[in-house]
Length: 468
Image (cartoon, rainbow, N blue to C red; front, side, top):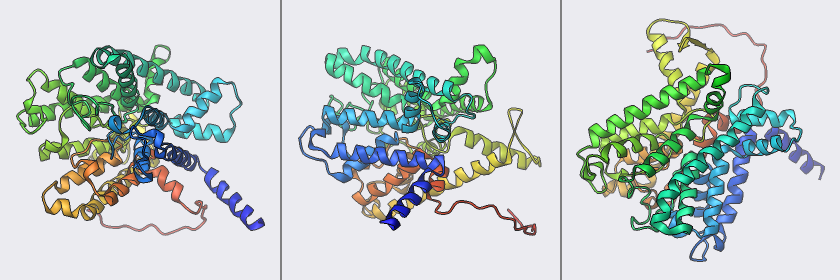
């Protein structure tokens, strides 16, 4: 008994040692509860359990705000199941620790140092001083955008589907869009299962509402905190500037590329089949959704190879730090770009928008990039073995598997290989990729570290090595 007690004590000490570990543990706990709930017969319309594996896949996809599905949400799950999924999306988008910290703060409960560290790591706050204000800002920002999105979408969905279904679809879509999740309830409409928003290219209100909810959720809560306080401070932090500049640039670049390449694509549900006035709307929406959202208004399977490759890059970069989105984050990408520019120009320091970037931040950006690339490419390599039969008969190509892998790691949720048609083994390997993409490669690596780093007094000689 003493041995067991000591082992349990050491395990809890290891779990609570770092905020990153607690964040990962909180997601695992939510995944466990969600899987149990979605396994229940009451969670489906048929009254029969979908099984542990499909429930686990759906739960991880929801909490990691990904959107990849193996069962159509609208036609498979009951109202109870849909409520569970949307709650998982909300928790996953804000993170369990952030939500808990918000309510503790509103309830005037005393929050300890460890809880503050967890909330700071989870929310992306830079200091304890701003943490209470930032947590309030997160809660209010989320409510403001999701409620506004709900009202706008309800004005369109209620006339189409009636009050009950219309309000339900509006609320579900608003939360899913702001959290960059990509889950939808359009499978029981005339467009059919797995149709996402392909039937609404001609409705600018729906397309722009969902699109801007995705952008607002993907900017990051630090950015909105800065913007809301701009009238007081008259300045924005570097992170906010990077998020706004990079988000705008990537959206515009993606839109122009989609328009130029996919304009004459006449495949099934492709952009070329749309009226000319709808094509810019579809191009804008696809550029936005590739940033980690998971909705689609055209058929991903019929994209040209060049478009798929650019989409992979956009998905890998992802959204802003401290946001509801995934990927390596736009700040990481921008630091890497400026680090390369500094190296080319022979500068010893990385300067971004007249701000010097610490070497530790550059090293962390490189680590995130390499770990993310390993996850994405590694998953695509594994899928070449699990999906060997489909590759052989030409159902899809390797680029589709790379697309799927980028979608999983970037927590995007779009698929050109059709996730439900993949083998169970292939779907199984997608689960950890979604999880790592949400919690972050660095946080996941820290969590898996068995031993704590120890300070060393050893002094090693400095050596030169030829590079390039």
